Image 1: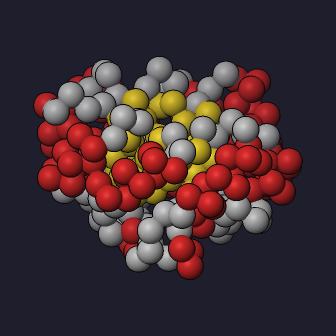
Image 2: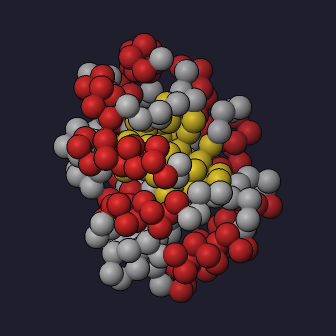
Length: 228
């Protein structure tokens, strides 16, 4: 499973055509990815056949959300549900840097059909084993966790990622989705160390490694040849 960040329908169609198998749709990638507009979501979903995980993140300043933030997030999810779309990317922490399970309880009571990627808020928790165990209780809805093992990049966090993948197998919990700094020339090293079943790519699959440029087929091909 090769997941790729996209911001519009052109990106999405390129990614699908080049062999990417799942998309993460965001806006404002320079801020780490925020909730895209309704129009963007609709055009992207209508333009591809592969799964699209839609970012639900109302602002870029932290992952501890106030009640007003959570209402905005739930309204965005409600709009997606009205479209018949249940795939989202979301994450929330408490002040003590543990998983905001109260918010997750609210979400799954209101939206029981969600298919969730818990995003890199996971990399800011006080203890990743504790956090993984907490998220495993929600594995009916939380299918995967996007993480760099608590480091800036996956290569820096590869030992932690390896431990998390082993924990995934032990607990049969959400799949570990390594992401941050991945590209064709380092995925082989990481995959040898971690052996995850899926990986998340951003600028590393684009020309000049820039989100201003298009996704390149040869880079996706190189990754597919290594992983498949």
